[in-house]
Amino acid sequence: MKTLNNILLTDSGLETTLIFNHNLELPHFAAFVLLNHPQYKNLLDQYFRQHLKLAQKFKTGFVLESVTWRANSDWGYKLGYDNAELDAINQLAIHQLKLLKRDFKKDVFPIYISGCIGPRSDGYQTTSTMSVAEAKEYHQNQIGSFKKAGVDFASAFTLNYSAEGQGIVLAAKKQNLPVVISFTVETDGKLPGGETLGDAIKKIDKETRNYPLYYMINCAHPTHFVNHLTQEEWTDRIRGILANASCKSHAELDQSTELDSGDKTELASWYKTIQQKLPNLLVYGGCCGTDISHIENICQKIAV
Image (cartoon, rainbow, N blue to C red; front, side, top):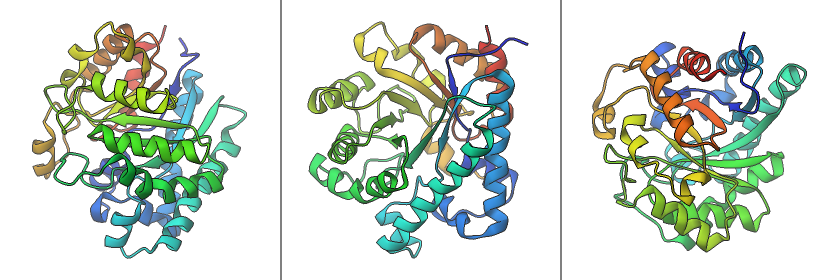
C-alpha cells in the first residue's frame, strides 16, 4: 500500500459526528462537557483511536486536538463553568490526549498534542468583535491552562477576523507557547469579517513578527477558497486544511437539521488540487460533516 510520509493527519468533524452519528446533544456545540462522564469519555477515546489507526495504516504523523473549542470563559459561563472549572477541564482534555499518545507512540510518529481554542463569539458571524488587546486578555486563561498541561502548541480554529487571531498569537507569545491560527471563510473566499485571507495572514505576521507556526483554513468547503490560493508568499504560510463536507454556506449550515456529508470522493479530489497549489501543506483533516471515512478517502487520493 502507498504511504503518506511527511504529512500529519488530524481528526474530522468531531461535534457533527457526535450529534448526528451518535445522537448526542451538545449544548452550544461544546464537546468538552463530555469529559466528566466516563461513558462519553470512552466514546471520545474511540473516536480518536479510529483516526490514529488510520495514521498508522498510512504511516503518517498525527495532531491530536483537544475537545476544548468551546472551553473559554463566555461559553463556559453559559454552560455553568467558572474559570477554575474551565482550567481543570482544559487540563483534563490534554491529559486524555497524552494517554492516547502513550498508547500509539510506537505505531504513529510524530504525534503532537494541540490545545484547541475557539472564537469568543460565533465562528460564522462578526456581530461581536474585540480589539487585539481585548482578544489577548480574553484568551490568555485558556492558553495558560494549555501551557500548564504541557501541550506542544495551541491551535485557534474558526476565527473570522484578524484582530482576534492576532490577540491569541500575542497571548501565546507572552507565555512562550507556539500557536497555529486557522481562519474560516465564506463562499466568496473572504473571512466573515470581510478581510481576505491574504490580508489577515500578512497583518498578523507583520504585527507578531511571524510568530504563528503556520496558518490553516477550516470549516469551509474547498470550492469556497481554492481559487484564492494564488502563488503569493502568504500562501506558503498555510499548512493545514480542515474542510467541511458540504458546499453550503455558513448561513445554510446554521439552519440545517440534517447532516450534509457531501461527496467524499469529490472532497478527496479537492484536497489533491489543494495539495498541488500549496506545496507546504502539512496537516490534513476535516471539519463539519466529515468523519473517519472522509479522511480515509483523502488519504487514498493523496497517497503517492
